[in-house]
Length: 458
Image 1: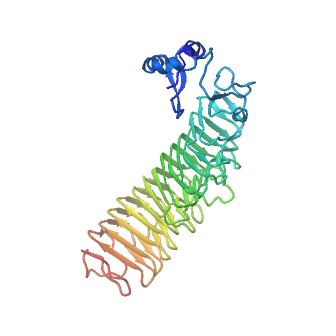
Image 2 (image 1 turned 180 degrees about the vertical axis):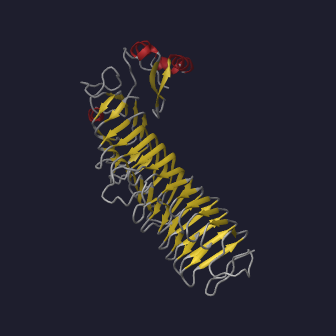
């Protein structure tokens, strides 16, 4: 740590209660608060360096750091008693690190590549926000900032590369249809590796997409609670990268602004543009919309031209809408699913793998196009007044391994086409017979119908 021995008494006097101060480590990698005991221990540990350091003449001093306070006048780099009124003024003065003091901010911060930013609790953006118009390498935005209102908040929409960029915030609340809460529309030249951490995200605006991800974006996004009224997380043309999104709750809420296409309401939708694109969702997903939305209303949607893989590690509660719709790409679900509608809807070239899941649905799963449903070590329970799984196209397939299928009516797997692939292997059982099947093959109830690919049984 760089600590100026003679500045400590002044810091002690200036800080609230005389108990803490702000420190950067020696490489200016992060800022944090330390109490006076920590300071004394640091002075003892680094006494030689402290003796050789330039002596301050008083004031709250952190070298090369600009303090920012809306409404301030003047500004001297390194002096907390003389903050800058704006980020732009501090950049012009040549600062390489920035500390935001508590207050309401309305400025758009165009980040300096490689710079360190730290915001105290009580920093609230009511307009402006943060952006980047040049590639960022090693930039850190840390601390406790809140972003509240109808404006572009954390908005990286210049297709810039964000290499090893860290972003922290306390809360984002997007209140209008014109806002963008968290947009990471990055470049494709280099892999953008980001670390985003937050406490709460709320996207209230219709057609605002909440969290919008695009380009060659890798790394991790970790937000404790995520809420939205319309396409809460939208991964659009995400390419050639692996991204992990973690949360305790991801919630699509009921009764909010509908946007210009109210039927497109999802907790997550993906259009991964490359087969090497991978997004992992870790946490529970809730679709709380009380009515069945037309078209592709669901908790999770893998939509047109999606080529990559979405892995869901958590439970899905879809209420009155579908659980997962997959028309292209691959969705792997490792968790339980509850829906009063269809648990899985597959069409086009889509593929869904249900692994170690307990699935409860109120209607029939439908598999069409050349889509494929793979059920492994899972239980499918259906209260539909129909079949458990309905294969509606000759090119579609269902493969079930070591699983249980339980229904209240209809048959286990219905095939409305003549030549779909329906395969069972390992221990597979159901309380319902299969469509037009005899009991000529084990396990009981599953055998081959004319025109079907022979089931795989052990």
